[in-house]
Length: 220
Image (cartoon, rainbow, N blue to C red; front, side, top):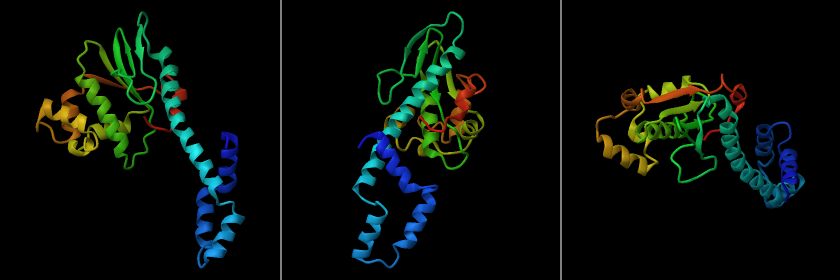
């Protein structure tokens, strides 16, 4: 099934609102038996083709996230590079590339986080932000260190907050081991470590420089 057909099938199923459609089906399936359930599935095109279409779009979503990250960095570059600054490498793809940061020039190392923070429970995003901040702060480099973000209010609320470091690093054994080796039990909450290293990393809201990035909604 090609992408266009997958998108059409999913759109036809969800109609104007996926939530409303699912609520309606929850109601319609009440009291049905094997035969009537099968008949309702058939009349609503609830079959393997719909599931295959959804999986196809899910695969595409992962690729789109990678594209957003790469295109965001490339779009920002002309605005953030200084005169005589030269790109030494970029790391645009997903996964391990063997490169420490998204960007290294003759003057800076940088990570980019294209996240529209919602202000709720965002532990996975917070964990990722802390990892980038930590690796920038502890990097053995004479270059300036930058963490480019879409807005600073929520990131700073997290970095100056009291979430436990053990919670932040609980899903990243490598990071936790490195932190333990460097600091032992010196710090227990995020704020304590951030205060220790905040002068090493410049947090930059990239949206005033590249307003087009303000509309991005997915995280890396």
